[in-house]
Amino acid sequence: MSVTQSSRRPLRLLHTYPASWRARYGDELEQLVSDLRQDGRRRIPIACDLLRGAAAAWLSQRRFVMSGLSERARGALITVLWSWVAFAATAAWFGHDLPHAAQELASVYPSGSWRVTILHPIVPGAYWVLLVAGSVGVVATVVAAVPFCFEAIRHARAAGKRGTLALIAVPPTTAVVWLAGVRLLPTGPLRTTDLRVAVIWLLLGVAGVAVATQAVVKVVRASEFSDRTWRVGYVCATAVTAAMLVGTVATIAWGVAFHDTAPLLGGAGAGGDLTGWLAVTVIMTVTSGRAIIALANTWRKQAVVQV
Amino acid sequence: MDLTEPAVLVLTSLAEGPKHGYALAKDIESFAGVKLGPGTLYGALSRLEERGWIEALPADDRRRPYQITSAGAQNLAGHLAAARRVTETGLRRLELRPAR
Image (cartoon, rainbow over all chains, first blue to last red; front, side, top):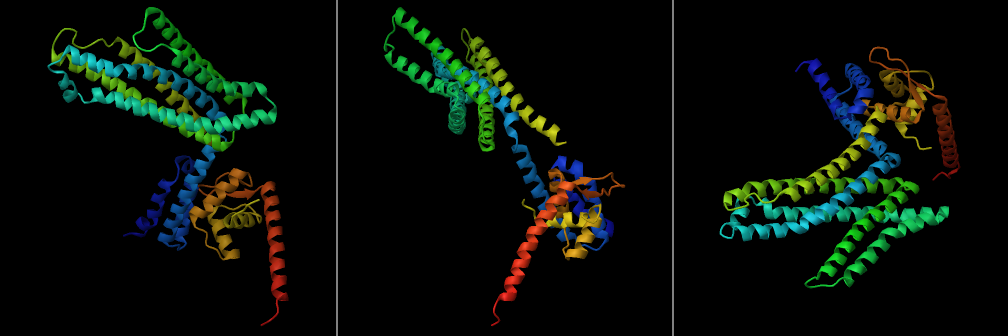
Protein backbone atom coordinates (compact mmCIF):
# COMPACT_ATOMS: atom_id res chain seq x y z
CA MET A 1 0.00 0.00 0.00
CA SER A 2 1.44 3.38 -0.95
CA VAL A 3 1.92 6.14 1.61
CA THR A 4 -0.50 8.36 -0.28
CA GLN A 5 -3.23 5.72 -0.17
CA SER A 6 -2.59 5.10 3.49
CA SER A 7 -2.63 8.79 4.37
CA ARG A 8 -5.87 9.37 2.48
CA ARG A 9 -7.81 6.69 4.35
CA PRO A 10 -8.82 8.83 7.34
CA LEU A 11 -10.02 11.49 4.90
CA ARG A 12 -12.87 9.20 3.85
CA LEU A 13 -14.18 9.51 7.38
CA LEU A 14 -14.88 13.19 6.75
CA HIS A 15 -18.01 11.98 4.97
CA THR A 16 -19.36 10.87 8.35
CA TYR A 17 -19.72 14.55 9.34
CA PRO A 18 -23.00 16.42 8.67
CA ALA A 19 -23.05 17.99 5.19
CA SER A 20 -23.42 21.55 6.51
CA TRP A 21 -20.49 21.01 8.89
CA ARG A 22 -18.37 19.64 6.01
CA ALA A 23 -19.30 22.61 3.84
CA ARG A 24 -17.92 24.96 6.48
CA TYR A 25 -14.91 23.09 7.90
CA GLY A 26 -14.35 20.13 5.52
CA ASP A 27 -11.46 21.60 3.49
CA GLU A 28 -9.63 22.86 6.56
CA LEU A 29 -10.05 19.59 8.42
CA GLU A 30 -8.86 17.64 5.38
CA GLN A 31 -5.77 19.83 5.21
CA LEU A 32 -5.10 19.33 8.93
CA VAL A 33 -5.41 15.54 8.61
CA SER A 34 -2.91 15.59 5.72
CA ASP A 35 -0.53 17.80 7.70
CA LEU A 36 -0.74 15.58 10.77
CA ARG A 37 -0.18 12.43 8.70
CA GLN A 38 2.92 14.00 7.12
CA ASP A 39 4.03 14.94 10.60
CA GLY A 40 3.98 11.27 11.57
CA ARG A 41 0.68 11.01 13.44
CA ARG A 42 -0.71 7.47 13.28
CA ARG A 43 -3.68 6.66 11.11
CA ILE A 44 -5.83 4.76 13.61
CA PRO A 45 -5.84 7.39 16.42
CA ILE A 46 -6.67 10.03 13.78
CA ALA A 47 -9.52 7.87 12.44
CA CYS A 48 -10.92 7.28 15.96
CA ASP A 49 -10.70 10.99 16.73
CA LEU A 50 -12.48 11.88 13.47
CA LEU A 51 -15.30 9.45 14.28
CA ARG A 52 -15.68 10.94 17.75
CA GLY A 53 -15.66 14.42 16.21
CA ALA A 54 -18.32 13.39 13.69
CA ALA A 55 -20.57 12.03 16.46
CA ALA A 56 -20.14 15.29 18.40
CA ALA A 57 -20.91 17.32 15.26
CA TRP A 58 -24.14 15.38 14.65
CA LEU A 59 -25.19 15.79 18.29
CA SER A 60 -24.34 19.48 18.22
CA GLN A 61 -26.31 19.93 14.98
CA ARG A 62 -29.33 18.14 16.49
CA ARG A 63 -29.21 20.40 19.54
CA PHE A 64 -28.89 23.42 17.23
CA VAL A 65 -31.85 22.32 15.12
CA MET A 66 -33.97 21.68 18.18
CA SER A 67 -33.00 24.87 20.00
CA GLY A 68 -35.03 27.90 19.01
CA LEU A 69 -37.57 25.61 17.41
CA SER A 70 -40.47 27.52 18.93
CA GLU A 71 -41.05 30.27 16.39
CA ARG A 72 -40.45 28.01 13.41
CA ALA A 73 -42.60 25.24 14.85
CA ARG A 74 -45.52 27.42 15.93
CA GLY A 75 -46.87 27.97 12.42
CA ALA A 76 -46.13 24.40 11.32
CA LEU A 77 -47.87 22.90 14.35
CA ILE A 78 -50.96 25.05 13.78
CA THR A 79 -51.10 23.95 10.12
CA VAL A 80 -50.68 20.30 11.12
CA LEU A 81 -53.42 20.68 13.74
CA TRP A 82 -55.96 22.09 11.27
CA SER A 83 -54.99 19.51 8.63
CA TRP A 84 -55.30 16.72 11.19
CA VAL A 85 -58.75 17.85 12.34
CA ALA A 86 -60.05 17.96 8.74
CA PHE A 87 -58.38 14.65 7.96
CA ALA A 88 -59.70 12.93 11.10
CA ALA A 89 -63.27 14.07 10.46
CA THR A 90 -63.10 12.81 6.85
CA ALA A 91 -61.38 9.55 7.80
CA ALA A 92 -63.91 8.91 10.58
CA TRP A 93 -66.79 9.34 8.16
CA PHE A 94 -65.14 7.21 5.46
CA GLY A 95 -63.86 4.57 7.88
CA HIS A 96 -67.32 4.31 9.40
CA ASP A 97 -68.70 3.57 5.94
CA LEU A 98 -66.03 1.01 4.96
CA PRO A 99 -67.63 -2.06 6.62
CA HIS A 100 -70.97 -1.07 4.99
CA ALA A 101 -69.23 -0.92 1.60
CA ALA A 102 -67.87 -4.44 2.14
CA GLN A 103 -71.35 -5.66 3.13
CA GLU A 104 -72.82 -3.97 0.07
CA LEU A 105 -70.28 -5.69 -2.14
CA ALA A 106 -71.10 -9.02 -0.53
CA SER A 107 -74.83 -8.53 -1.11
CA VAL A 108 -74.34 -7.51 -4.76
CA TYR A 109 -72.02 -10.45 -5.46
CA PRO A 110 -73.10 -13.12 -2.96
CA SER A 111 -71.47 -16.02 -4.79
CA GLY A 112 -68.10 -14.40 -5.22
CA SER A 113 -67.78 -11.81 -2.48
CA TRP A 114 -65.01 -13.84 -0.88
CA ARG A 115 -62.98 -13.31 -4.04
CA VAL A 116 -62.66 -9.64 -3.20
CA THR A 117 -60.65 -10.55 -0.18
CA ILE A 118 -58.56 -13.11 -2.03
CA LEU A 119 -57.89 -10.91 -5.04
CA HIS A 120 -57.27 -7.80 -2.97
CA PRO A 121 -56.69 -8.43 0.72
CA ILE A 122 -56.24 -4.68 1.06
CA VAL A 123 -60.01 -4.10 0.73
CA PRO A 124 -60.92 -5.32 4.22
CA GLY A 125 -57.44 -4.34 5.48
CA ALA A 126 -57.95 -0.65 4.67
CA TYR A 127 -60.46 -0.32 7.50
CA TRP A 128 -57.96 -1.62 10.05
CA VAL A 129 -55.11 0.46 8.65
CA LEU A 130 -57.29 3.57 8.95
CA LEU A 131 -58.27 2.58 12.47
CA VAL A 132 -54.65 2.08 13.56
CA ALA A 133 -53.48 5.28 11.80
CA GLY A 134 -56.33 7.21 13.43
CA SER A 135 -55.47 5.77 16.85
CA VAL A 136 -51.80 6.75 16.43
CA GLY A 137 -52.91 10.26 15.47
CA VAL A 138 -55.25 10.58 18.45
CA VAL A 139 -52.63 9.27 20.90
CA ALA A 140 -49.99 11.67 19.49
CA THR A 141 -52.47 14.56 19.79
CA VAL A 142 -53.21 13.73 23.42
CA VAL A 143 -49.49 13.32 24.22
CA ALA A 144 -48.80 16.77 22.73
CA ALA A 145 -51.88 18.36 24.30
CA VAL A 146 -50.88 17.55 27.90
CA PRO A 147 -47.64 19.58 28.16
CA PHE A 148 -49.02 22.40 25.98
CA CYS A 149 -52.13 22.62 28.16
CA PHE A 150 -50.19 22.67 31.44
CA GLU A 151 -47.75 25.31 30.24
CA ALA A 152 -50.49 27.45 28.68
CA ILE A 153 -52.39 27.41 31.99
CA ARG A 154 -49.22 28.29 33.92
CA HIS A 155 -48.38 31.08 31.50
CA ALA A 156 -51.94 32.46 31.53
CA ARG A 157 -52.11 32.44 35.36
CA ALA A 158 -48.70 34.08 35.68
CA ALA A 159 -49.63 36.77 33.15
CA GLY A 160 -53.18 37.14 34.48
CA LYS A 161 -54.68 36.32 31.08
CA ARG A 162 -58.21 35.23 31.88
CA GLY A 163 -59.14 35.16 28.18
CA THR A 164 -56.53 32.48 27.54
CA LEU A 165 -57.84 30.42 30.46
CA ALA A 166 -61.35 30.68 28.97
CA LEU A 167 -60.02 29.57 25.58
CA ILE A 168 -58.28 26.58 27.18
CA ALA A 169 -61.65 25.52 28.62
CA VAL A 170 -63.37 25.59 25.20
CA PRO A 171 -62.31 22.15 23.83
CA PRO A 172 -63.20 20.05 26.92
CA THR A 173 -66.44 22.02 27.47
CA THR A 174 -67.47 21.55 23.83
CA ALA A 175 -66.69 17.82 23.98
CA VAL A 176 -68.65 17.30 27.22
CA VAL A 177 -71.70 19.25 25.97
CA TRP A 178 -71.74 17.45 22.62
CA LEU A 179 -71.29 13.97 24.10
CA ALA A 180 -74.02 14.68 26.66
CA GLY A 181 -76.31 15.68 23.78
CA VAL A 182 -75.50 12.45 21.94
CA ARG A 183 -76.64 10.45 24.98
CA LEU A 184 -79.96 12.29 24.89
CA LEU A 185 -80.58 11.43 21.22
CA PRO A 186 -83.20 8.71 20.66
CA THR A 187 -81.92 5.24 19.81
CA GLY A 188 -83.47 2.52 17.70
CA PRO A 189 -85.47 3.17 14.51
CA LEU A 190 -85.46 6.92 13.88
CA ARG A 191 -88.47 8.97 12.84
CA THR A 192 -87.99 11.85 10.39
CA THR A 193 -87.93 14.44 13.21
CA ASP A 194 -85.38 12.39 15.18
CA LEU A 195 -83.24 12.08 12.08
CA ARG A 196 -83.31 15.85 11.59
CA VAL A 197 -82.25 16.40 15.20
CA ALA A 198 -79.46 13.85 14.81
CA VAL A 199 -78.18 15.52 11.63
CA ILE A 200 -78.35 18.98 13.24
CA TRP A 201 -76.49 17.66 16.28
CA LEU A 202 -73.86 16.10 14.00
CA LEU A 203 -73.40 19.42 12.18
CA LEU A 204 -73.17 21.21 15.52
CA GLY A 205 -70.49 18.69 16.47
CA VAL A 206 -68.49 19.58 13.36
CA ALA A 207 -68.89 23.28 14.20
CA GLY A 208 -67.83 22.52 17.79
CA VAL A 209 -64.67 20.80 16.55
CA ALA A 210 -63.85 23.84 14.40
CA VAL A 211 -64.46 26.26 17.30
CA ALA A 212 -62.40 24.12 19.69
CA THR A 213 -59.54 23.92 17.18
CA GLN A 214 -59.59 27.68 16.68
CA ALA A 215 -59.47 28.15 20.46
CA VAL A 216 -56.43 25.85 20.67
CA VAL A 217 -54.75 27.80 17.85
CA LYS A 218 -55.33 31.10 19.69
CA VAL A 219 -53.88 29.63 22.88
CA VAL A 220 -50.80 28.34 21.03
CA ARG A 221 -50.31 31.75 19.40
CA ALA A 222 -50.71 33.70 22.65
CA SER A 223 -48.69 31.55 25.05
CA GLU A 224 -45.04 30.92 25.71
CA PHE A 225 -43.81 27.32 25.82
CA SER A 226 -40.51 25.75 26.78
CA ASP A 227 -38.16 24.23 24.20
CA ARG A 228 -38.99 20.78 25.56
CA THR A 229 -42.71 21.30 24.94
CA TRP A 230 -42.04 22.49 21.39
CA ARG A 231 -39.91 19.41 20.81
CA VAL A 232 -42.71 17.16 22.09
CA GLY A 233 -45.16 19.03 19.85
CA TYR A 234 -42.92 18.70 16.84
CA VAL A 235 -42.33 14.98 17.34
CA CYS A 236 -46.09 14.40 17.86
CA ALA A 237 -46.91 16.48 14.77
CA THR A 238 -44.50 14.31 12.79
CA ALA A 239 -46.23 11.17 14.12
CA VAL A 240 -49.66 12.61 13.24
CA THR A 241 -48.47 13.50 9.74
CA ALA A 242 -47.03 10.01 9.24
CA ALA A 243 -50.35 8.51 10.38
CA MET A 244 -52.19 10.79 7.92
CA LEU A 245 -49.90 9.69 5.10
CA VAL A 246 -50.43 6.00 5.90
CA GLY A 247 -54.21 6.54 6.13
CA THR A 248 -54.24 8.33 2.78
CA VAL A 249 -52.25 5.59 1.05
CA ALA A 250 -54.56 2.93 2.56
CA THR A 251 -57.64 4.79 1.35
CA ILE A 252 -56.24 5.23 -2.16
CA ALA A 253 -55.26 1.55 -2.27
CA TRP A 254 -58.74 0.58 -1.03
CA GLY A 255 -60.46 2.54 -3.79
CA VAL A 256 -58.19 1.21 -6.54
CA ALA A 257 -58.61 -2.37 -5.31
CA PHE A 258 -62.38 -1.93 -4.96
CA HIS A 259 -62.59 -0.50 -8.46
CA ASP A 260 -60.39 -3.24 -9.98
CA THR A 261 -62.01 -6.15 -8.17
CA ALA A 262 -65.71 -5.47 -8.57
CA PRO A 263 -65.77 -5.86 -12.41
CA LEU A 264 -63.99 -9.23 -12.10
CA LEU A 265 -66.97 -10.49 -10.13
CA GLY A 266 -69.39 -9.49 -12.88
CA GLY A 267 -72.91 -8.17 -12.41
CA ALA A 268 -74.61 -4.82 -12.75
CA GLY A 269 -72.96 -1.77 -11.19
CA ALA A 270 -69.59 -3.47 -11.19
CA GLY A 271 -66.94 -1.00 -10.15
CA GLY A 272 -69.13 0.48 -7.45
CA ASP A 273 -69.85 4.15 -6.76
CA LEU A 274 -66.51 5.73 -6.10
CA THR A 275 -67.65 9.37 -5.95
CA GLY A 276 -67.48 9.44 -2.16
CA TRP A 277 -64.11 7.73 -2.16
CA LEU A 278 -62.76 10.24 -4.66
CA ALA A 279 -63.88 13.20 -2.51
CA VAL A 280 -62.41 11.60 0.60
CA THR A 281 -59.13 10.84 -1.17
CA VAL A 282 -58.80 14.44 -2.36
CA ILE A 283 -59.43 15.81 1.15
CA MET A 284 -57.00 13.32 2.72
CA THR A 285 -54.30 14.00 0.11
CA VAL A 286 -54.61 17.78 0.44
CA THR A 287 -54.59 17.74 4.26
CA SER A 288 -51.67 15.27 4.42
CA GLY A 289 -49.77 17.29 1.82
CA ARG A 290 -50.30 20.53 3.75
CA ALA A 291 -49.01 18.92 6.94
CA ILE A 292 -45.94 17.46 5.21
CA ILE A 293 -45.11 20.78 3.52
CA ALA A 294 -45.51 22.67 6.81
CA LEU A 295 -43.13 20.34 8.64
CA ALA A 296 -40.67 20.24 5.72
CA ASN A 297 -40.60 24.05 5.55
CA THR A 298 -39.60 24.19 9.19
CA TRP A 299 -36.53 22.10 8.43
CA ARG A 300 -35.76 23.97 5.21
CA LYS A 301 -35.80 27.33 7.01
CA GLN A 302 -33.45 25.84 9.57
CA ALA A 303 -31.06 24.65 6.85
CA VAL A 304 -30.95 28.14 5.32
CA VAL A 305 -30.16 29.67 8.72
CA GLN A 306 -27.48 27.07 9.33
CA VAL A 307 -25.59 27.58 6.08
CA MET B 1 -19.07 29.64 31.90
CA ASP B 2 -18.36 26.03 31.02
CA LEU B 3 -15.20 25.51 28.99
CA THR B 4 -13.94 22.11 27.92
CA GLU B 5 -10.24 21.37 28.06
CA PRO B 6 -9.71 21.46 24.25
CA ALA B 7 -11.51 24.83 24.12
CA VAL B 8 -9.24 26.24 26.85
CA LEU B 9 -6.16 24.94 25.05
CA VAL B 10 -7.30 26.46 21.74
CA LEU B 11 -8.11 29.84 23.32
CA THR B 12 -4.81 29.83 25.19
CA SER B 13 -2.93 29.14 21.98
CA LEU B 14 -4.84 31.83 20.08
CA ALA B 15 -4.15 34.33 22.89
CA GLU B 16 -0.66 34.51 21.41
CA GLY B 17 -1.95 35.37 17.93
CA PRO B 18 -3.89 33.97 14.97
CA LYS B 19 -3.14 30.37 13.96
CA HIS B 20 -4.50 27.76 11.57
CA GLY B 21 -5.36 24.17 12.50
CA TYR B 22 -1.95 22.59 12.16
CA ALA B 23 -0.16 25.51 13.89
CA LEU B 24 -2.66 25.24 16.74
CA ALA B 25 -2.09 21.49 17.09
CA LYS B 26 1.70 21.94 17.20
CA ASP B 27 1.54 24.89 19.62
CA ILE B 28 -0.79 23.05 22.00
CA GLU B 29 1.49 20.02 21.87
CA SER B 30 4.47 22.18 22.73
CA PHE B 31 3.02 24.14 25.67
CA ALA B 32 0.60 21.55 27.12
CA GLY B 33 2.06 18.25 25.94
CA VAL B 34 -1.39 17.30 24.59
CA LYS B 35 -1.75 15.86 21.09
CA LEU B 36 -5.18 17.07 20.03
CA GLY B 37 -6.73 14.96 17.25
CA PRO B 38 -8.14 16.73 14.19
CA GLY B 39 -11.76 15.89 15.10
CA THR B 40 -11.33 17.19 18.65
CA LEU B 41 -9.54 20.33 17.49
CA TYR B 42 -12.15 21.24 14.88
CA GLY B 43 -14.97 20.32 17.27
CA ALA B 44 -13.58 22.91 19.68
CA LEU B 45 -13.02 25.46 16.90
CA SER B 46 -16.60 25.12 15.61
CA ARG B 47 -18.09 25.50 19.11
CA LEU B 48 -15.92 28.50 19.90
CA GLU B 49 -16.78 30.15 16.59
CA GLU B 50 -20.48 29.48 17.19
CA ARG B 51 -20.20 31.26 20.56
CA GLY B 52 -18.35 34.16 18.98
CA TRP B 53 -15.22 33.61 21.05
CA ILE B 54 -13.00 33.13 18.02
CA GLU B 55 -13.33 34.30 14.44
CA ALA B 56 -12.06 32.99 11.15
CA LEU B 57 -9.65 35.09 9.08
CA PRO B 58 -9.32 34.89 5.27
CA ALA B 59 -8.02 31.46 4.29
CA ASP B 60 -4.52 30.97 2.99
CA ASP B 61 -5.07 28.09 0.54
CA ARG B 62 -6.92 25.50 2.63
CA ARG B 63 -5.36 26.60 5.92
CA ARG B 64 -7.72 29.08 7.55
CA PRO B 65 -6.32 31.02 10.51
CA TYR B 66 -8.46 31.85 13.54
CA GLN B 67 -8.09 34.64 16.05
CA ILE B 68 -9.49 35.12 19.51
CA THR B 69 -12.21 37.78 19.93
CA SER B 70 -12.51 40.16 22.87
CA ALA B 71 -15.39 38.04 24.24
CA GLY B 72 -13.20 34.96 23.93
CA ALA B 73 -10.29 36.67 25.67
CA GLN B 74 -12.57 37.84 28.48
CA ASN B 75 -13.99 34.34 29.00
CA LEU B 76 -10.56 32.73 28.87
CA ALA B 77 -9.26 35.22 31.44
CA GLY B 78 -12.20 34.46 33.74
CA HIS B 79 -11.71 30.73 33.36
CA LEU B 80 -7.96 30.89 33.96
CA ALA B 81 -8.42 33.14 36.99
CA ALA B 82 -10.85 30.63 38.50
CA ALA B 83 -8.48 27.79 37.62
CA ARG B 84 -5.61 29.69 39.25
CA ARG B 85 -7.63 30.12 42.47
CA VAL B 86 -8.29 26.39 42.55
CA THR B 87 -4.67 25.60 41.73
CA GLU B 88 -3.27 27.95 44.39
CA THR B 89 -5.71 26.68 47.02
CA GLY B 90 -4.86 23.09 46.19
CA LEU B 91 -1.12 23.70 46.29
CA ARG B 92 -1.38 25.66 49.53
CA ARG B 93 -3.38 22.91 51.19
CA LEU B 94 -0.95 20.28 49.97
CA GLU B 95 1.92 22.28 51.53
CA LEU B 96 0.02 22.55 54.82
CA ARG B 97 -0.69 18.84 54.93
CA PRO B 98 1.31 17.23 57.69
CA ALA B 99 4.03 14.90 56.50
CA ARG B 100 3.50 11.23 57.28
